[in-house]
Length: 628
Image (cartoon, rainbow, N blue to C red):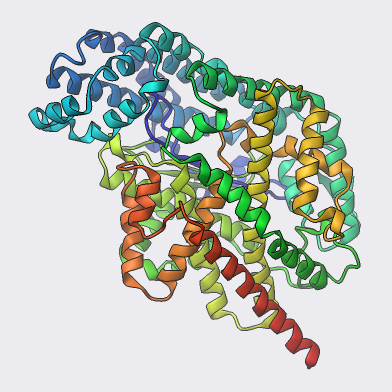
C-alpha cells in the first residue's frame, strides 16, 4: 500500500474471507481477559484517545507553512515530509483504536462516531496538505537525486518521491487536488452503510435444525451451519439465508452501484483509462497481471471441476449442489480445537522459519494482540491491523473451534508478523507494504500449518479431511477469489459504459460467472438461481480491486513454501527478508527478490501442480480403502 495519498488511514489491514462464528455466542463479559485484545496499548482510555485527537486537530494548519516552498531547498522538503509522516502515523493510531473498538460491538454508535471524527480530521488535513504532490511533480528526477545527496534525511522518502513523479500524468492542480481531498470521507459512505446494515441491522432469519437447535442465520451463523454434515440442514440454511438476503437485493444494489460511481469519479478525474488501471497503478502493478490471472484460472477450470467431482464422490451424493461445498467430506470426523490447542499447533508449524520468527509469534498471544471469540454485535470474519507503527499489530478472530478457525489463526498471524517485521525493520515512510504482497505472508503461514498436520497425522480419515481442507483453501482462494475478481472487473466495465446496474443486474452478472466457474451447465455443480444473489454477501466488493490479490498471493506463497518446506534454508531467509521489506520497493520487485516472478505463469502453474498432486493422494487413499 504505497503512500500515494497525502496522508491517510495507514490501514495495514488484511481481511480474511473466513466468516466464522458460533451458534451460541458468549457475552463479552464472559470471555477471559487473556482472549481479548488489549487496546489499552494504543490508548489507556477513551479520554486519553480524545486528548490525543484534540492535540492533532489543533495542529492541522502546521503543514501550510511549507506551501509553495517544497522545491526551494532539501531542508524545506525534508521538514514537510517529516511532518506529513508524523501526521500519518498519528492518524493511523487514532483510527485503529476507534475502528477496533467499534468492531467489538457494531451496535454501539459511540465508537462509530469516534471513527468518523478521525476520518473527518483526515479529510480536513488532506485538504490542507493537497498542495504537496502538485508541487512535487514539478521536480525532475535528477533534482530529487541532488536533494537527497545534499540532505541524507530524504533518503527514506526517495521511493515516495519517485512514485509521485511516476504518477505525474494523474496528478492534478493544487485546487483540483484540494477538491478531491474533500471527497475522501464521502467516498467511504457506501461501504460504511453496507458494514453497519449487514452486521448490525439486517433482519437475519432463524431456523430450526434437524436436531431441534434454533439457529440464527446472521453471517457467522450462516458460516457455521452451512458446514453441517446433515444435507437437509445445509439446504435449509442456504434457502433461509439467501431468501433473506434476496429481499434486500435492490438496497444492496444501490449501495454497490454508488460505490462503483465513486471509483469512476476518481478514475476520470485523474485521467486513467479505467478503474482497473487506476487501482493497480497505485502499486505499479501491470494490468496484464490481473487479466492473466483470470485467463489462467479459466484455462484450468478442468482442474477445478476435478476437485468438485472428487468432493461429490467423497460426499457420496448423486448430484453436487452449491450447498454441499462446505460440508465435511469425512463423515463422523469433526476436528475440534481449543484456542490453546490451535496456538500450539500454529507455533509448532513455524519450525522451518527458525526460533526468532516463533518468538515473535509467541508475543501475539502473551501480549494480547488477538480478540478471539464471537460476541453479540462483533464484526464478523477476521482481519489483521498493523496500522499502529509504534505499538504492535492486532488480530480480530471469530474462533469457532474448527480446523478452519485454526487455519484462519495462522492466516491472520501471517499478516500480523508481516506488519511486525516490516515495522521493526523499516522506517515509517517505508514500512507500509502493499495489499498485493500482504496475502503472501498469510497464505505462507497457512501452508506451514497444513504441512505440519499432514506430516504428523497418518490416520486415513484425518488425512483425507485435511487434504480436502487444503483443496478447499485452493478452491476458496485461487478459484473463488478469481471468480470474484472477474465479477468485480465486469461490473466496473458495465458501469464505465453507462449500463444500468440494479440489484437484479448484479445478480444476473454474478450468476452467469458463478455458473460458468462451477460447471453448472456441464452437470458438475448444481447452483440454485436463488444463490446467485451471493454478491450482496461479499464485503470485499466495497474495496478497490482487492480480491484478485488473494489469488496472486496464494500462488506466490505456494511457490515460495514449496522451496522452504524442501529444507532450502535460503528460501526461508528470502521469506524473512521479504516480510521485512515493507514498502521499500514496488511489490513486483519485492517478490522477485524473494524468488517469485509474478509477471510469469510459473507461480500459478506450480499451484496447479500442487493441487493435482493433492488430489492424486486423495484418490490413492480412496482406491486403497476400496481395494481393502
